[in-house]
Length: 239
Image (cartoon, rainbow, N blue to C red):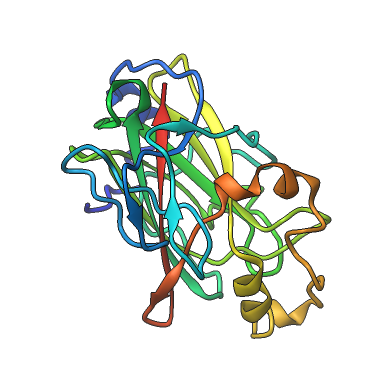
């Protein structure tokens, strides 16, 4: 999917183009079988195979089980650039994030034209602000319900488990937000290297966060090695 010129398009344009679908909750995914964690979702036919799980084993998700929303979180910007590569000048371990939006109540049918926002902290735990735009962007799902973002493994901050924020906009009136986590073993490994190592990371980046303890099982990505970084996929179901 080619990136439009950011000077002439924004999330507002995406929302104007998005179809009316309605939303009540997010879903962890739709699956009738087991897939290798982190493998790309199969969305051409139903059921859709979800990739949520751990980096060390397969993830089995019953058909269209709704997962809890984890909240919008801080630093949301309502007019992010439409683009797939959101890294800009931020250093860090590459993370290619593939998201699929489906209608959970209708056999996990992929939904086209749905606006999806992502934003996150950089390797040093900082969010873009005051006119900066790094590590945030938006796209509209294609005919297979997919969007892909090129980002980095997020850094840690405060007592919060490292995460990527995701907000889905079926239309201009409805939205749902959640946060996607990464396996703690992967984070500990990544945080040993520059630029993450410029700050001493907590011994347990995830498990010190009560939100992760409550919802992390359904909202943790299953990254696999991809060149110099990782690739992960996740299916979001709208009721």
